[in-house]
Length: 309
Image (cartoon, rainbow, N blue to C red; front, side, top):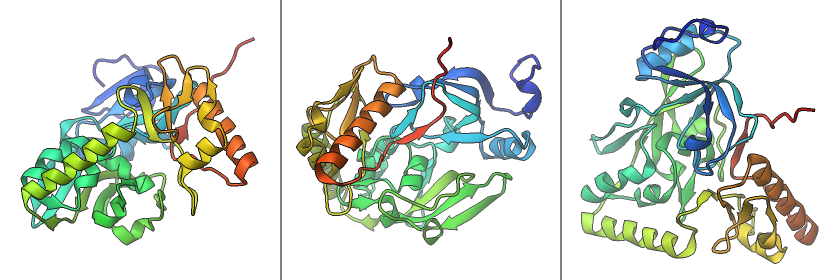
């Protein structure tokens, strides 16, 4: 167990090949750079190491997987139980097999740019523009530029809470807009993606066009979590926020971006409570002005920080 001495925490943990950390700050694992600690953090060596952990951990010990942290808000009180991070390169392998692109869950979406452009993998260009990692795309059916993961997903290799590994087909996820019926105890290990063979020059041009759009219309060089709220049916979230005055609201170090008012920013001083309270104020403002209910696109997890007497 990496040289750690047994205590009340380690005694509940299997002897793995990966690494455990305790009271690990989750700030550096999220794009917002916000959040309290993980009670226990586990970095498995590979799928077999993760499988052993799932099969032998205390049944009462909860497990939560964190991906690229791009659309995640961890509350200031942190997360109890075990937080699993698939950061080992064994979870980030990418390969072309039988006209299918296979991507490990830990592969960063931006890292796909070279293989997609060099090999002319048309229809996958949008993936390079989504923050975070491949595994994190599945739960929310993430997308941009008019395409979503469900448009290109063939299947996913999944591990359940018992450590069993199986293949889930696209239909098993029942995808909707920024939604899937993703069981909370499933862990994505790898996805298989379909593509349209195109010339590398055309694919590279598409990727560059997407990059240019994001540079011009979305905030750069500041802590953000991408789109904050889902687009309600028939509406654009940013327009609702702007028209209700939500773009002028700030709480502590949290505000909506002047460049794109559906992007929430942390100026470097915001707490998770600031972010969550800002979101609540904007939801209230939009509801009052338009009657429309905004829904968080950012996933909020963990406990609120306890304030002592």
